[in-house]
Image 1 (cartoon, rainbow, N blue to C red):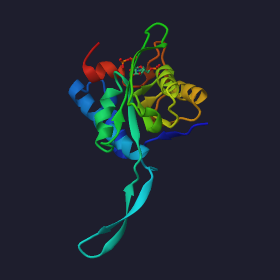
Image 2: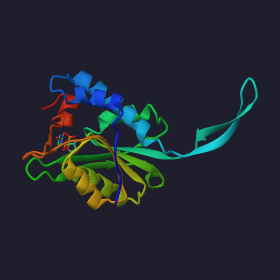
Image 3: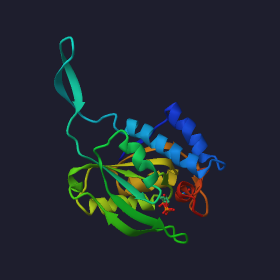
Image 4: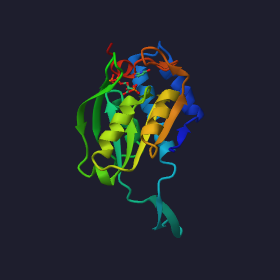
Length: 209
Ligand code: PRP
Ligand code: URA
């Protein structure tokens, strides 16, 4: 079974409070999501592999570490996942970015795929699927399935807020995919919204309704 990591660093929790607040403006919401994505990227890369290098300091030779030539890929789920991309790229600027376009049918709550565009070498990369919201889990499951259908095997999922139902569904469908979240909320309401959540992530990011 996959692991679930709750990124409970005080800076993340502080910013998440203002992300949730219904009075936060679109401009501030966007900036806060970007900042939390950077902080979560710090957590998700904690176990990234290092290799030894020698450098010459002004004083002597030093035995040092650099990140080994790992190939990373970010896979935002459109639309709302886009809001987290730049924040992660600040820490991992060499990552390539693929896009999976999905929307949730408002009646059935089932994900509908409308776009997939991935780096050519995607199957060789360690991938982080990004979406602020993990509600029923349908969108994340469909995005991860789309990647596995294209021979990708090293996949993590990063979300801001998850419902317990969504975590369980992803773990059932993809037990090899570890999940990183900033918070696990209480439950899903009758419309499939996370309670207390933050509302509609895409609408709040882009100012739509
Ligand atoms: C939201 C959110 C996730 C999905 C989560 O996207 O960004 O992708 O819902 O719900 P689920 O876990 O029940 O699938 P939405 O479908 O609203 O599309 P949008 O980002 O284009 O607004
Ligand atoms: N999608 C959202 O944007 N918010 C939710 O609470 C659930 C799904």
